Length: 363
Image 1 (cartoon, helix red, strand yellow):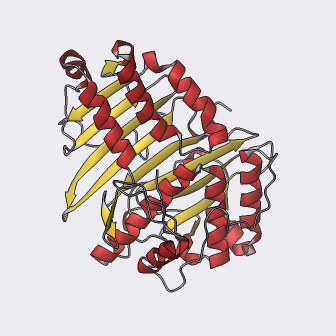
Image 2 (cartoon, rainbow, N blue to C red):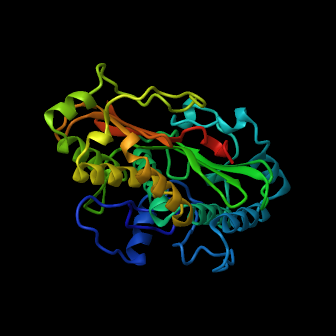
């Protein structure tokens, strides 16, 4: 998804257009341009993060446990008390897409941590997520740094993101890592060797931004691939896909745990093979942020259940349109919504939930 990383909590996101390898030196310069505090971390790429020693035989879950244990070991007793909490439903549900000034979060915020502690948080994310997932997350946080610089508001910032551990990290118990803030909520629940990434809220503001003359769009794949699907539909399919009532916001966002939506839209069983490939490509954008070991079975299940999957749409079908779309499978629900301009700044809200398995409920 994203192609640039920097040496701070904000990593430069995927660019719109040709994907060109960028040197670490360039990434460092981008980090310096978007530092929002004097104590911003000096983080590293995946290869360099390792205060954690990983084994080739270890599972992603065991490596994540090691990374979390290492992070907790960098904290004072007071910090540990703040970052850890019971794994209750009320604690699990304590996340939002809203900025800090409009929502009270719990845990430790990145700008309150030392550079060593911040690097340890990034190591957790890099271990639990795929390369694409890590870059997706850091592309979103970078955008919030851009928003801070453009508005001057301390409600935003690339390091205004919170880490929280719910439950007791162990190899066989159930526990959850939460990382989030404005336009981001990552919930990683571990139960033995399983670790679903749900619910996960991805948003971004601004939806596109420029660094050093290059334009970036963190949710480009989720946008462009949806347009590819809807533009492939014939007239009858499109008529079925378009929702009767216009929708402009995600429905299953923050505060909506346990709720479901009736199937709406066009069923993929009516799709041609090419259309099915386009839909599966879009779905892959949402499942691939989880580490490769864990997402393989989810992608396989998505393909097996493709004929039972529905695609719904609201808005225009030209690639510049403001849209809402929904993908519903027996396994998951995806929602994506463009938000109205705010002071000339476009932004996106989106959510991925697993049916009956948010926060690892089935495990």
